[in-house]
Image (cartoon, rainbow over all chains, first blue to last red; front, side, top):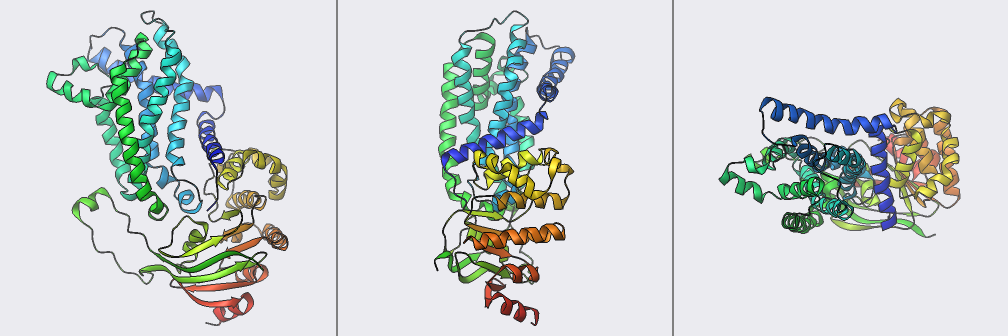
Length: 257
Length: 240
């Protein structure tokens, strides 16, 4: 086995994430703006669909959309790309000796870096209309929520990668699952628009808790402690569960991918 | 002489078949049998390679050679037996594994170097020598997707050749690239051996094996069918 200490592992993770971003942005400002613009583009499509066509009566709808859709994109794209990470890097997993857990982590970190790089434009978008002034609390809330989301997403990404190595068609189902989750979080309408019995179920969704934390902080500068605690508890339970599964199933990943 | 690598009574079975959710829910159909189908990928494989020796592994396709290298590298765990490997190991098992097509040759050297366990600083220090060895010149600044298979081989081999390793595990990659570069690689491996480096090479290229290796084994259906000095081993294999 190629030996690797913690420092080398971190360096490998950094290189993987940096190189992936470099490939995505093609090392240029235009590439960065295009990548950020794509997420704004998605928000714009939903704005057309819900605000213009469906005539959703909600003030500052575009701010609501943008404040949620960027953290969602980090969550969604990380887990979806991580699902394929063992299979897509099969030669690497099979033949290079290093901890497989780095691969899905690099997916999560890449999307996190993309989110952080997008953040100045997101904050500008939220502040510009004038209804949501910049908050001094962002200084501690944003790093805390980034940490929370990292702890929340990584176990899911690792679990999905592991599951897909053994049950190959998970990568096809995960897309469908995320569409369902997108509307069940909900991302494009407030939970107040969801009919009563269903809304109680939506409240149980830990992703909803996480996204509510982001919206509360970015739009109102408020720390949503109950939702943050719920999301953190979910992340902890998931972390323990996935760690146990990883210990049990990781040694044979190289043989099944 | 000290053994750099010892493989003692290694048994390895095949992993369970890949299944999907549908198979899991609806049950599994019986696997078709082929002439390669067997319970054990490796059966009681034992050998030892001394420091400064090159060891060849030969055999027809599907006989367990690549599985053996994966076991030696520690990626695949044997059910029985053990492997002990002393020193830093570098492997070149499949070219292009770990390379990113959108990144330049230079960026890929850093990425692949990290996969081989090298620090960024180590790659940076050796970068000039690596590029010179590869003879790729300015092409290292171009994205890898513009490279031919031969150019990727040059990049991969040049990096591995400059990795600080005591043991090299190589699987059939010497067959790619032009004859002159192949010759250069061979000369480099012989020099590595002379400096007390250890090599394990899987190849169908008998000429390369004869030129590089001292001893070897032949695998047949996962078992050691023959072992000995490489010249005699190849002779018996070819007259089979």
